[in-house]
Amino acid sequence: MIAPRRTELDRILVKAAVEAGAEVREEFVVRNLLTEGERVVGIEGQPKGGESVTERARLVISADGKNPLVARTVDTPTYGEHAPTAFYYYSYWPDLSNMGLEFHWRHHQFVLSIPTNDGLTCLVAGRPMEYYREFSSDVKRNYHETIAIAPELADSIGKLHPVEPYRGMAVPHYFRRPYGPGWALVGDSGLCMDPLKGHGISDAFCDAELLAAAIDAGFSDRQPLEDALAEYERDRNARKAGYYDRNREASLMEGWDEPTILQLRAGLRDDRAEADRWAGTIAFSVDYDEFYSSRFVKDAMASAV
Image (cartoon, helix red, strand yellow):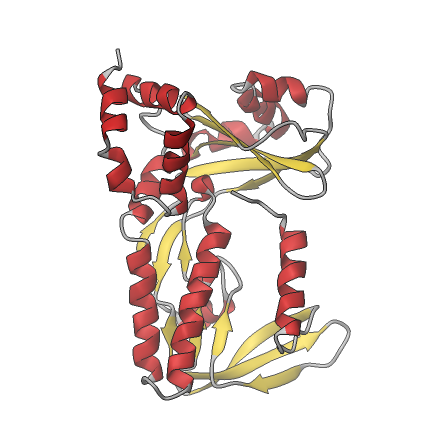
């Protein structure tokens, strides 16, 4: 698992896009879509300090997160939708280079430590939504109380200060229909899940790859564009089949302290190969059902008292 900060990742992606031949306009705000009937045919926008301009396009792709202009304008349907089930507060801490990737959870509490660039470590504290009002009334105190379920982490940051303010997020779960006449959606604008298992950027890359293949098939006339985009939606949903619901169930943070789960965690701590396979179920490199039906998992859970 790797967690580059968006300040670094976005710079890398923009540089790669330019080198690949894309025209990039930074500090440019898209204000409206241009439409002809039900078809999107371009955008209206404005560079910083400049005059409003319009650009026409055969296809407008929205990659602007959970509240995208395209989805609002065309009113595309949402399905499989659920309100946020958990919330998270995080910040970045210096001088924790000895800490690796760590997950900690206790009853209705979650802590993630993940190293990132510039010598910083991101520490995330999460709880189910029912605790949000109480938590948000004193973010700093409750953040540190949650981190305290991992005593070594809590001790490590005891005399340190985060390099940025504490930031919070609570993310809904949904699929959106990701295409229509003259437009397409990718990333969180088309599919969003609770960030508990850290799949947001990975999902966006996977969706972008699927969408690029569909556009190529349509623009090259190997396949009608609408058929190719419909296939993009089916492939996207198929990749998330099962995982979408499991991720939401996990974000409820229920049953984490059951004896069988605690015994499985103890077994994973003592067996690096199986711990790697467990991590693979999150990264999609190991089949979820195959792992949880394995002899190792059955034996670990059967030994619980």
